[in-house]
Length: 629
Image (tube, rainbow, N blue to C red; front, side, top):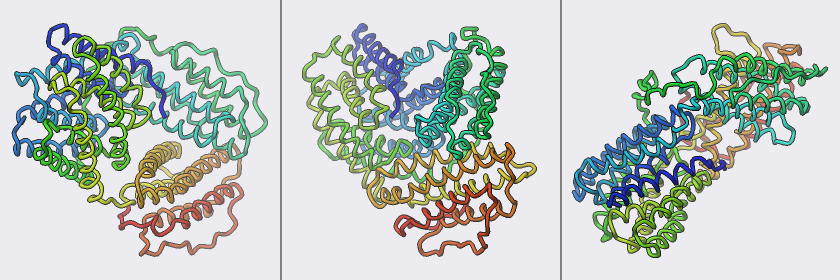
């Protein structure tokens, strides 16, 4: 569970309450409610990373929000026309949601606001509601970016410093190694993604990337220390945290850590990695201007080759778009038949539940209902016990703060926080009071039922389609990493680059496994059966890295035939993970032989991986055949 960001809580509270207060001061609480909804859009879209990414992540989805609100308002009360238009927008929303994080948020707001515009009475003229919501979003954006001119590189520096601290945790005996390594992988992913998004001021960006890359020898030495069951000197994590503080502030370092050369190879590798990182930090800190140097704010959006690649929409995106369109069309048709006024909550529920990049559809449907109940209780207390008017401002202040405060705890908590806020703001537009609370619960139940039946049960996905093939590809890359670690190949990617890609892929596979574990059988049972395979692959990568560093520090190189034989066994495991029960798994006909002494720890880990893979029951391995990539 992520820690609560105090600054985000304050921003959310101020933006939503201030937007509503301005509307009340102008004598138009409905205008203030729309502006507060726009601020809520910014709150839910905010990535809280680099300023540039935050601006893009807030502005682009708001543009989609404007389009959706205009389209929806044009078919308000249109019956069959509204069903057709909202269904088409759902198809577009589903397709673009797979093109990246910003596109996912844009697709979500496009569809949500189309549904709101088609189901909720909005002030006239047609351009006023989009303008008010945009002003609310811009208010939140101003609060989010207020420190940009003063501290332009603070988020990037913090991300790189977090990597230094994560490496220190890996080298600390009090921290479980597997947990610390996964935290390090996540910190590395975030830091590299953040720096990759910056296009201006190449010198500063290059310095931070150099400081990040300088940790590679130290990161690779950590598995060797663990393999030899040696805990590095306690001075090393302390020195890393000192370097982290220096990177975060941009201030000068205190000089190279003066630690004695240990007589042991594993400790020597760690010490050399630390010295290298300290030298790079000391050499690059002085080339970066201090915060507040007057860095001009960059333009909001940069289009590059990634945008062109995004136009190639994968088949899975169209599949999800069709599924979402079917469910939204069914939801729109249902609300035209049930006698509950303005039941736009049904398609809204379907939209939230059917977001595949947000987690398991099944678990989100359950959490949606569990979160809606306390949210409705809170809304009932507000709508029935507090008179409309200026008393709404402190209420919105509290409810707005709860959204970022509870979101890290999970989707159910987020639903419980957003539900009363949305209902209060909607009441300022519809003036229906507490009479709609029970119908909203019924709407949520109907929306969850539609999502579960039409969007989940009727669209069975192969286990291999979701996870199995990706895991098999990762095992295949593990074999390539082994070959590259002990074999010089001209023109090929270095082994360190393959290691980073492997850890990133394993992080994505682990996240998908965690989502699948929350689903009912057979998917949840399959995920539980395959879970040890992921852990075994991680150990193989770790030991391969450790042995590569051990050879680099003077150990005897393994025989090429032993490396090839071991890589072949891993290749066969990848093929077996792609097989169905009706297909016979491949077997290795070669003679194992006696491995090179340096490879014996890796042989044990590969044998353990083979044993775990063979242990998979037929139900766990069941899937239709998937071609190799």
